[in-house]
Length: 138
Image 1: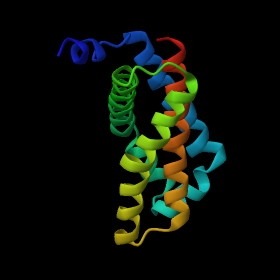
Image 2 (image 1 turned 180 degrees about the horizontal axis):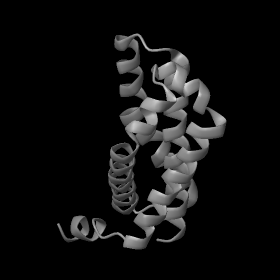
Image 3 (image 1 turned 30 degrees about the horizontal axis):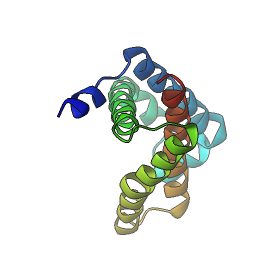
């Protein structure tokens, strides 16, 4: 039980770095890299995106914080000793708990495969960069 409690302890500044990583990658990913394509695929206008901006960014901050914290806890629980082991954890977590359920939703909702690829690869990239940083500051 003591090991579990210790695993829940995470450096707060590492969490903030994780959130910043999510926002920077998101800004690039859903901006110049794939922004135009993503907007078309989700069926929103630029105006609709701007109108939902504040609540979307607050929600994104909260979910990025939760994601970074849970990833840090996973790395602590398995006592990750290297960047390689952190990346392996990310690949497994992403495949089992992010990509597979997202693909399932996409298939049932009839959404384009390209939308799945854009969103899922964003998750993989942010999780990987965040895991590397978390591993280096452990």
